[in-house]
Length: 421
Image 1 (tube, helix red, strand yellow):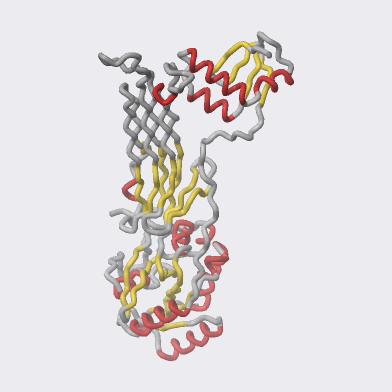
Image 2 (tube, helix red, strand yellow):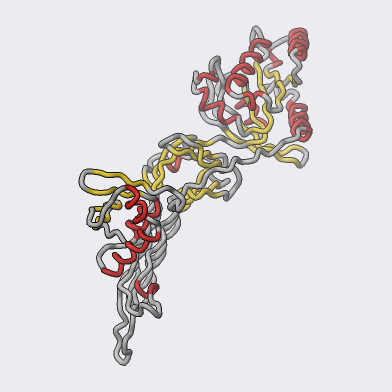
């Protein structure tokens, strides 16, 4: 299956069902009263991390995903059925970004961790819910809340305990295939894998997840050779093993060039625990190896020489990796407090009043909500909306702005004549 680490998709929740006006009409039931049921809640859209998913490949052709709408209410006080929630499964390590402003919304690290991307609309109430001692036959009902929509970018950063990094043809894939059941592509000519490959390694009853990260080249930190795409997968590796081909002419420069790319990309990544693994020692003499080891040690780096081809010192390397991993103290980074996406009206926002042509224009989040929520097809509903407008203090603000009785007022889709009291 092809590996895809980034994709974009539009998510939509379900609309809330509308409440209805209905009446109880049964023989032998005098003055049956209101019987309009409430609308069902729309389905929400969740993005959920799943350890059994390792790529975003299954989302490659999906442009829009939508949860179910809530059903409208029915007569006999029956409520509409709620829409089913939609769960979008992604690999652990997936970051969620707002496609419009590139803001990071959430990061999904652990199995079954969820992010509420789009909340389902609440159902509107039917007239049975408005019955009271003062109003036994209400012609009141509400529309369901609209659906939410969010365009997201999903970006995967592979999670592993150990990450192999280095230049192409350093032997990372060969080493991973030797110590695990992973089957990365291997060839006798210089090339690099284009996707991270994971493998589980068991050593002395202990288990770690290893990742073969695609090879890095000069200027990878500036995006050369898909550098950004490859380097991001190192962010969630806890320990880095830097594989170096010791048959190269200037091994010291090979090491420093990769380290400089890592440092230029991220200081945090550069400070991760790591050590050097010199591969292909079968291609050089013992004297050359001893000289190289001294130079590397002068750089202040721990180093283990191996030959993957000859299976030489591999057990020593594994033992060192597991001991090195255990000796490291890892601080679990605390997630930032991501802002919740909400369309709830801000009751403390100021009322905005402006004069446009021959009418007064009034704006407020709460008014926008209620104009959308209350249908204007019954006298009771219109009276209820006017009461909402009055309770918010719109009348006082209009008088302050210079409005007179009889002036036209527009509040979103609601138009009426101002009645100053």
